[in-house]
Length: 163
Image 1 (tube, rainbow, N blue to C red):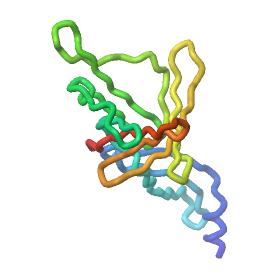
Image 2 (cartoon, rainbow, N blue to C red):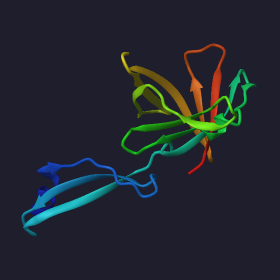
Image 3 (cartoon, helix red, strand yellow):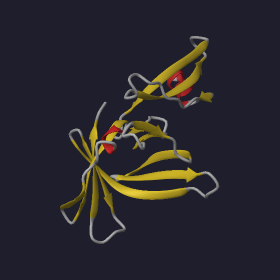
Image 4 (cartoon, rainbow, N blue to C red):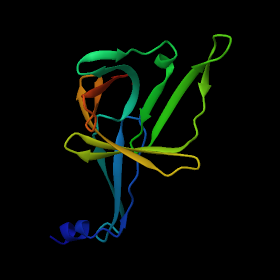
């Protein structure tokens, strides 16, 4: 009983993320066990289907494909990291037809799982205020679908998991 009480009294809580292929994410809790006279670490696995690397596939309005990705667009990626960060790699074609990595003016890009299939995506460009957009997100195997809930007609963006 005393040991159980000690576990419940957490003296130090560290929330962290470890990257095993950027898919294995954990919350880490550390507490002091007086019987063992040492710190004990407990790791709790975070399971969120958005974690990973995604590529844009298509955009539909009312079920009709309105945008298919260009070759350049297919090089671009969204990498959703377990700590809530997003790395958006985007490419452009130069005057000679070469693909080059395009830097963005975003200071940060983050995601948050709001539950009930709702996610918040927040980004901030240099010199501007942060912007948060809520999206209904569903997963079907290796496909992720963003549903723009504020638009009429219904707009869906499809992504394919790469890693």
